[in-house]
Length: 481
Image (cartoon, rainbow, N blue to C red; front, side, top):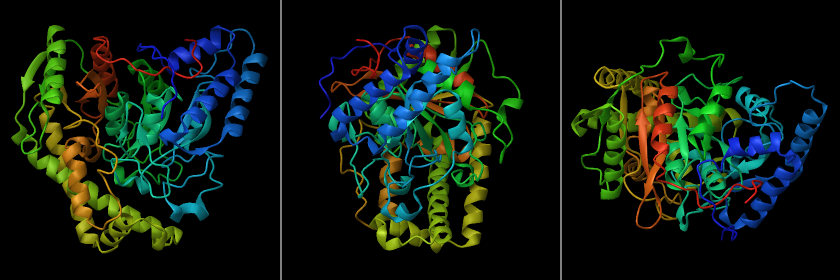
């Protein structure tokens, strides 16, 4: 399955290290891109890459090399100059990369899009793109197994899922094909794959990242775009260059009050009511809380009953918005439902039958979810929770060859009960690995903060990362071993 690269542990086996090597060691962007392309070819059976475009990657890398060679002394290079990257096959779009959203239904509309505002920022930061990553059809699953293929496998355990909907992105980063990849999150789609693959995944504050010029991927405010990363420092540096001044449709959250400093109140949620949280993942949360307590932060134990209603309501809001959005997309683009998977068609039917009153009711419920979470943050500064209730699901655990939407949504909520809460409320949320279970799979924890608290989450995540409880088993292509 994966190439027999010799594992090379270290949290600094990341995009920042790769950019530094390109800038200071004589390593060219072209050479690094060639290494990434070779890694993609060796690991084709992983199914991480949906559209493999090596010629585009070499063209972008050569342009980055020319920029460096013709630059004047003292000119500042982009922070990730020459670092290979992959675009998710959902979101964006990125010029030169066809966008299928994992579906044959979009084939006639896949070509020709210009860069979105965010894609332009990725390229301005120095990233060089050579393809797109695998997603479930229209992002409707927490496992990336589209009927049109490829099926995406977890590099850490090939019989398991890499998560969804940014599963291909997470698999490519965990396998070392790239050190960082574009990702999106409307109901856990950055954080669940990151948790499955031992990565750092930040779902930014609503409005922090640009979604223009057409804002087609905001989904009424529940969706965000960013990246999956191998280190917190990569996430922090990328966030610094991609976030802010998003040109609507929401207020810029970084023109608000600064984040709290000093000793923090860390609200710890280590129980999940009727959701079957396994012992290892509960223990990871408690040990992460202990590490933060050693730094002088105050631990506040929270009761699941305070969250049960907002978790249920968040799942309902997510389900309704996603179904209506899908129905609108098919109508606007005149897509053929017969080319979609059975589960997608069932979502379409549900969205098409949703009344304006029912949709408005869901939006109002979303506002109340946001308010309820704000009241929690009057008592604590940050939430520390499990990300997943169990180890990454096995391939086939999220089938899409059926029409039972409710059962599918229940499966997703059972795997990641607290995922949609961040999307519906607009709050930032970050997951990172904090140890490994007996099978070597990552034990992920989640941090959540009030809106505009992204940098606070990154700082706390960096502290937990320094515990050194997780090491990437596969090196990044292009970095010397």
